[in-house]
Length: 482
Image 1 (tube, rainbow, N blue to C red):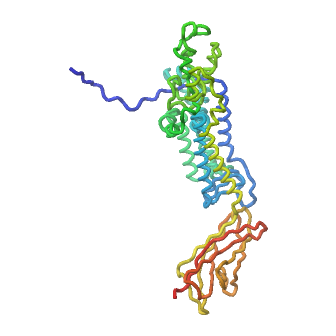
Image 2: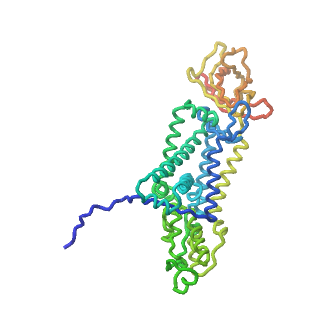
Image 3: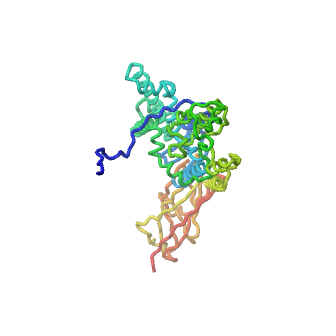
């Protein structure tokens, strides 16, 4: 007779097991320190850098000015109609991630991802307050006491300070940093500023302080996307099982070979230092962020036991097969420089060079014309026909500019600005456009009544300040239909 299980269905979700990474030193740990210092310095310091753009533009080096709809990046100023430059940067970022992934796996996740960087900061704070891995485990298992409450309170307070600095630094990219800081402290900043800081502070505190590896394993879609971009030629953090198995727990130099055991002494140091708590010896898995701290830990153990380094190492699956059969490992540079990575690098460089070329050749003025349709035209007593237009002149420099607007391809036509009379009409008009501004000019154009019902012509603008920049736009002149 079949037994019927009385237990409920198995849960689809496993309760989080806390991860307490152990402190480690080595080449890759020092590399993480360097990248963390650089990325944090860029994030926190950039809004305070100055860039002199003259008296008519802000002097903050990097500024996203939503009120004026401008993006300033050093000497570069992006207007709303030039958003394709931002799109180009996003394309470069995507291709850059493809390049890094195809070359060295999830190195972005292990070293430069914001989640990784701030989690690393919080883990170092945790070690400074509660001690290393074993001390943290003991403290977590201990009953609540004055010491435990004090350490936890200090740790969470430092977490909140880092989170506040993170959210605060973000809003400085959208306004003059020194001014906004004074307003923020004095309680005079906008509600949007306080709300943004509060939201970013909360997400940093929760993601970096509590969720940590869960964000990388469950929330982030990037590990799933990376699978499609990796192949047997991609560098991964790999445990060389043919060399390490079977394991000989606690064995020292000379004993492993005598017993027919592999190099792995099952010390679990690779697991203890892993920030996501995985065992790399189980093979490639989604929890591995390729930070390579397990390599540092294993190399140190191999050195102490008198075995060759590299039991856990950066290697491709293809090279692992060759090395397992006794062949020599491929040089690291040769593993990175392969057709796929070179193709990604060429595409990335082409997009970047194309954007630089476009930036270097763009004009700093622009003209557009919109016909006023109410009425479409006015029949004048002398037989002429008048059309109305709104001319938009854009000055993308940080100083006033003199410009000349000319009529083209409309014989016998003349124009005058709103506020002038027809006696002042001509085929050219001089205009001074304020710095970093868009000037709207209501304009009347009169032409002989004889001609096509709809005739194309143009407005051309030229700078008269010696730079000789020009731009043109097409318009339609309407007449009565015969």
